[in-house]
Amino acid sequence: NAKPTINIRNTKPTINIINAKPTINIRNAKPTINIRNAKPTINIRNAKPTINIWNAKPTISIRNVKPTINNRNAKPTINIRNTKPTINIRNAKPTINIRNVKPTINNRNAKPTINIRNAKPTINNRNAKPTINIRNAKPAINFRNAKPTINIRNAKPTINIRNAKPAI
Image (cartoon, rainbow, N blue to C red; front, side):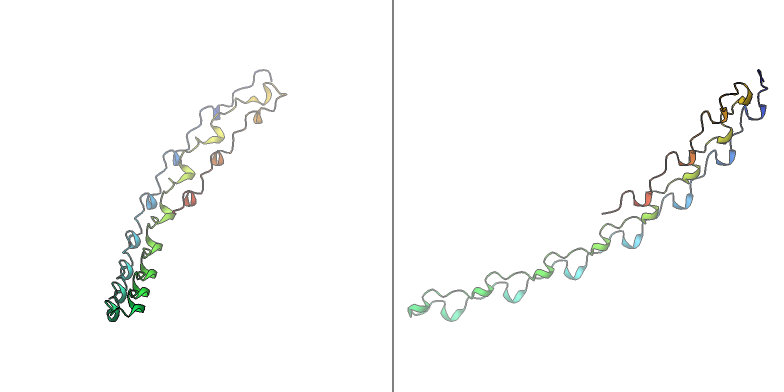
């Protein structure tokens, strides 16, 4: 066993041609924005609420504006309830129909991952660096396992892109 014959079949493995340059999963490459919600119309009914007009500028209670000095009424209080009418607060600042303010571009496809399984195909990895039929050269070291190839498919797992940056 001193000089083993080199296992010629695996010295230069043929690249697994099927995955050498994977075609991008074209369906999702540039997703069309979910057009229905792209620019939502502000809920127009409440966009600029009209001030509750009845009380906008209350007329001073005219009966006592300049009373005869009948002293109880010398300084009539302006009808205080309406001096500063509160704008119909429910609609003062209408929230833009919040569901659609910034629609997330059909988020499942927002950043389509190039068909990741084949993005960087490993050159037919089983044979990428074939060990010269080592089995008997130095029989003590079980050379088949000397440098096991890391399971390349999982070496850099892609982050679940759908949720990487959720739209606020």
